[in-house]
Image (cartoon, rainbow, N blue to C red):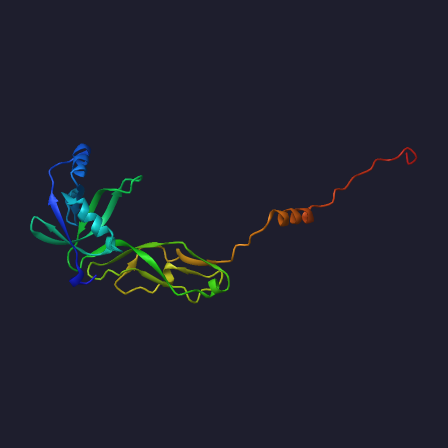
Length: 220
């Protein structure tokens, strides 16, 4: 997102803390939040709040959680990202937000989505493309955050895979994952077998039962 498309989020300081105070804020249309940075001492952060309507509008924008934002706090402009969102697991409502302030050129760690490019040869031959890892944690300068991690699957045959070590990424971006971790793989097509076919296969593989006869009276 270029400078001309930068987004401003208006934050306000809050004195209220605790579960009951946070519930009250939400009823009044606010979302409790914190703003911290690498200089935050002992994990302490500034207690802030953001309007629920404003946050919802921002979150509707694709990829917003890995873009640098303009954070306005008491008339002071800062740069930062949305580091974490805590949501109500039932209603999908945002309960709390962590903003992380960054300095120009500072290296930060964040997760980027994996974007598939092309159609693999294996899929054209009937295989199935399976995305194993949909996001990757990376470290990069705050001013050079990629939109996503592109994975070109055009040359993949059935049984082929692309791992972290195979990725082509910008020189100033470091993927914080094991190089052998699989990103995407093309698996053979699934064969549907009917119950009748399963029963026939079972009968064909059954070994004939051997019955041992005892000696007759004449033989004895």
